Image (cartoon, rainbow, N blue to C red; front, side, top):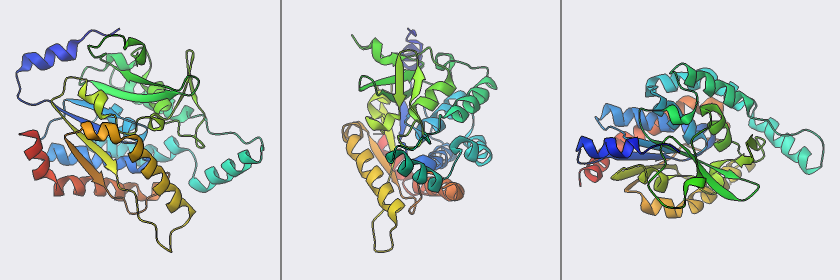
Length: 299
């Protein structure tokens, strides 16, 4: 169990507002979160705690490790194909074959685990408990018992909740677990657990970020694209995913102080070709709302 070092640190600083940010899942669109962080930094807004689910967790993990938004952007450009490891057409074919009980299997997600462990090692970090830059909260769901667990470097001060928090896990394993999207990746085994994507129960972990000693929490999610006559099956699937994710996150979103919703112009779950566009969508959406965000922070 990790000591409450962040809680003490926050209270001793005496600053008026501690700002947390919760980043939603969304496949390759998660690069938009990097644009959000860059825009906040450019506007002089400091993040004191961070949380993320699935692709949002990949960004949150790197940021908490001390990678700058510019560096995270470069890493995604370099390693996105390695992280995804496939394309959406191949995933669709595999999924259809699985429905027919052909032995094709899902991807194991080992690329994610190995890559992010390597990136964490560059910062002298192995387990999530060793992150000292800021508190971090990453949800995942154990498919065996249907419960949500939180990977974190700081267990909040609450009674009877310690079994929900895991601190003795490597960065790579934690990020692999929260990113194990059904029909794309296999469940991630850790000790007695079998984890699936955190978005199954918690796509925008606002409440967990708030528990990390923050005064205000900014939630970042994605707009569900409209369906038109020209929409294909993947457009429809993405809209369904967004609608489900936002519905699942209603309780969390109600607890946020500001919701920044980013449109990504029908970017698919694994649409690597739109990586750069998504970064710009995140940056520009944040800059457009920056005065509103500052007003909320300063209330």
